Amino acid sequence: MSAPGASLQSRLGRLVRRLVPIAIAIGALVALVLVVNPRALGHALSRFNPIAIPVVIALGGSWFVLQGLRWHVLLRAAGSSLRAADSVLLSIAGQVITALLPLGDLTRAIFATEAAGLAVGAAAATVTVQELTFTLFLVLLATPGMLALHVGIGIVSTVIVGVITIFAILTVPALFRLVRGAAALLPLPRGLLVQVDELQQETVGLLRRPDTLGFSLLDLARAMVGATVLWVILQVLDPGMVGWFKAAFVVAVAYVGGALSFLPGGTGASDASVVGLLVLLGLDPGTAAAAALLQRGVFTGLAGILGISAYLAARRRYNLGGLLAHRPG
Figure 1 (cartoon, rainbow, N blue to C red):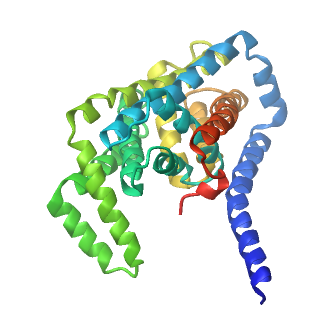
Figure 2: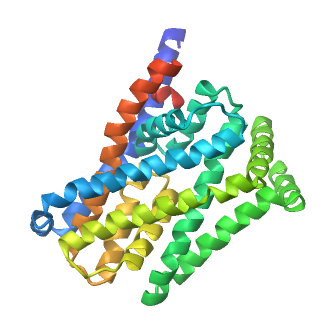
């Protein structure tokens, strides 16, 4: 095959790999609508008071700002000289890819390497630490709702143990050497192990800083905002049916389920989890699906609108490359 033909085939292959997860996510949402009955879904959506729209949008916007502020603290600890406003701008810019591609959140790390001159390992460590602490706080917030429902104990407990185990592997040298030695026996690219070593060193450096741990309260605040978004939506659709802690439980399980699915933004898997758990809490399927889709609309919609606007501004300021060129892996 000629070089131009091979190049075209390679580009088409990359495009297909990028589009397949998006197609699967969209298909999952369509299937969800069909399963719960479009008429019931439409009736539930008609009950949503438009007056609440600015409230949920403001809460959703604050979720992205809190994420950016927490990331700013981690970037500064890693050696960045960016201002807080610039860190937030880059964080929001990365949300476009997060919503479209699996592992898209690492796009923020690549933006940081270009805008702040950080090493790839240091930038990736900031995202790793943030996601670990955010997930831990989210599942801890889910504990009261889990205990009240007497369900999901295994799921939440497994996630908590899993996050703590990851912390231990990264921070306890003997444990990391054990895991690293086992990984070295696998047929992995040599460069991958070098990157893992660099990521571990940078992550440990961040986790051992008191200021880094202290500002993890911003992750707690973001987790609370995420739960509040769903709770407000539910109060509008079916007032008093689901309490705040139960809403936090739903958000936590759905977030973890979406992350494990490796679908873009957890779309489909996360939404199905929300619907299933809300039905378990006593909502009818139409109302549960309406809540899931409204929640999806808030976060994915804002990720698209705010993300593209932030990316265009950041690209002019820092001469960033194309969005799709920053696909992790």
